[in-house]
Length: 233
Image 1 (cartoon, helix red, strand yellow):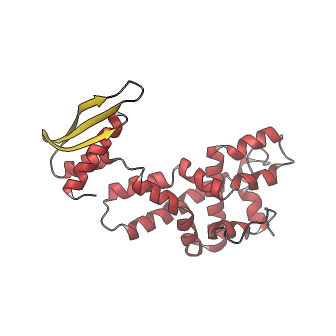
Image 2 (tube, helix red, strand yellow):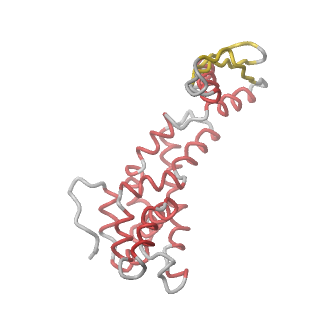
Image 3 (cartoon, rainbow, N blue to C red):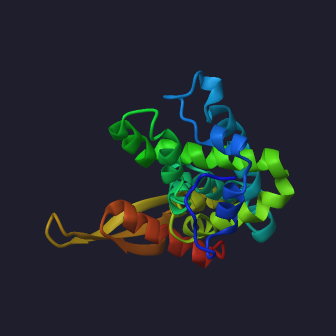
């Protein structure tokens, strides 16, 4: 039986699956190398396996749900979704840091434990170790949807917010034998509160214009407009 704190019935499927893991698997998932008898007894080997489990689940759902996306675009989205930062976000939502604290409370100083349970890399590692333990316990098919549900917000963020329109446009134009350059059309406001207007020029012709609080943001907006005009997004 799990020693983790009781949770509400509204918690996600992945959270429940982690809670239901046998004690010996939970113990391995939440054993940090700082108190493990040796590194092989910590979660690090599970972390290695869990990274691949996560990549497969995300790659599969992106492949199935976005048949018109190029390999390059799918790879960029997957890369963001499975990143350390993204995994840490999901780990916080699952409160994995508290689970680590419960198991390490009597083994290392409280100050060190507090640091570990908030560390982004540790949280990401705990998430990946949990996925590996679930994979070993249930196989991939039973846990795939639970992983996708837990990462749904990260997938949505990668699709709608974390998008590198400039790179996407450059690659799309390269396939057509064309190139893009950017120019600043205008900059308004005080140095600390400036708004830029930039143009995206395809083969020397202005095709898109965008605004932003930085030149980089304005160029991204201009690239997005060109992609829309080309029917790529």
